[in-house]
Image (tube, rainbow, N blue to C red; front, side, top):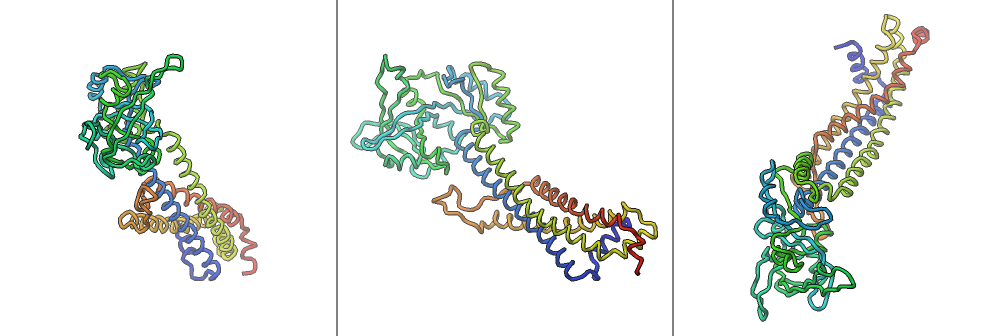
Length: 416
């Protein structure tokens, strides 16, 4: 142990320090502790929300979409599907047809995004079946009382409420896929369905716009041949963005134009980029709490230097160099920062852990898509927050430590 650290530790623990200086030092440590704990809790909550949103988006829309430019469709999609299965990390693939249309039940009408899927494979690339809150995932042709057999459709809950569509009710979907221009008009194609299920992802954009039908019905509704689909949804065995980008890039390079790939991040880049900006903004704003504590450290250190003037003069008179004196007071301030940082990390971890396991803070499930405040703690966040806190505290010690190192020993001990 260097003598500088020994002296700094003695100063930090000194009983001779005036009560006022000691109180300010405790306030400084408490300020660092509160700032660090607040940063950890806020960033953990934001991580939790980001993970929830990401899992729901991916659960609805898969990791990678393989499609054509301008969504012209993919011919012989079954052959391409079999080829793509051989790529590393590919877990499941399902074809889809994607278009827009009108939905109505005779009284109410609204716009709808029609998604034709293969009922057997769609459960492997999405959480559609898990998200059904009423009814079931049944897109086959069903018997309807007083009607001829009709194919099934699964609607988003908000969309179903908007048009007042209930389970077992007959609805109509109109497609404008065949209407090419005004000069050679073709009547929109109309097809009847029976509502077999309602799904809820918790994301309004999906729940209020989407309806699922079988891929065969979608091909018939949009006059597409049996060997054509809008694209392929691909689920990997890992959600890591680097792996997803790597696999998507290899597929795009192998097939080239007119085919392309689109990852879950690219489809929602604005949302996730904004969430990242929010995290950095929260980090910077809450760091101001630590900066307030750092200013307290400056005032504490200045008063300590004034109180220890005689001791500084004695140390310099027996040979202590300027950088050693400066090091003593830097270490004293850094010790305060480290104590506050460790306490803040501990408190932040305990509070986040308790919320994660016991869900003390609940949310109304009918308003939010989750029932409790989500938490996700990341080691990197703890490291960055601790490093930022200690650096701020270190910076706060430089001025008073520099003043202490420049103290004239003759002046300091003249009247002692």
